[in-house]
Length: 331
Image (cartoon, rainbow, N blue to C red; front, top):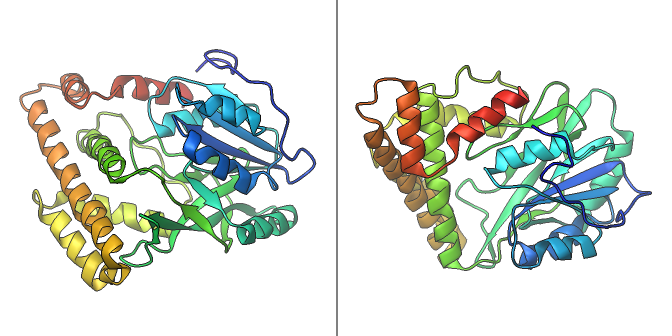
């Protein structure tokens, strides 16, 4: 990994709140002009620095970010985990705290007030804060089906937080200290249409399937030690690895949808909820199963890990070797 100035352009900017909290907010972007103003506006009053790391946007995202007072860096895209870890390592973060915010997320005034109040008085053993994310789909808050609250670690002390190096479902983990929860509105509301949602999740499916097979065939070498994250995230990951990923093709998605829609009362989310839970709770999970089947079939007959990795990369279209090499360099 090179120094910060390599493959990196910083546009002229002023800090949105240089005299405010000692907090840096990191946002990754690629053609997010339709979301970015909302995201930055929601944290401008609490962030001393807002860092945008862009991956070749063509819709004016970089220029808009600079106009809104963010520091703008550019870097070629591999995946979310690699991009975010690069930001942590190369953007000279000098604040006490760091916050992860996706471009299509925003926080409410109540959460902003809670952050402003709690961060300055946090004791030394408090290393991170979790937030409850609300997912809004087709204009409706999806409250049921296990989708709320989604408790995520999103604020942590500088230097103690890292992002899992995975292709999908990556979480922030801490090297030490305890996690406290902060109440308040934390919203995930993508403004894309249904076609965008479906296309995005089709790509997610290939990435998640690749993660499963990389772990199954130990293609990444020794696994990372488990670090501190939220209990909810750790529990879900354990269930996936220990049970779900071992089910026959198609069985897991069907059982998961039934559990989510009926046992966890997803049907109470109305027509929008029906569309969401079918697409995200069944169709997406089946897409992962199908992608895993296709990728593993392409790997059949491979005589060693190197050949499996070659076939997996070719079939998936993912830059898996480059990502793994970057992980080694970071380690």
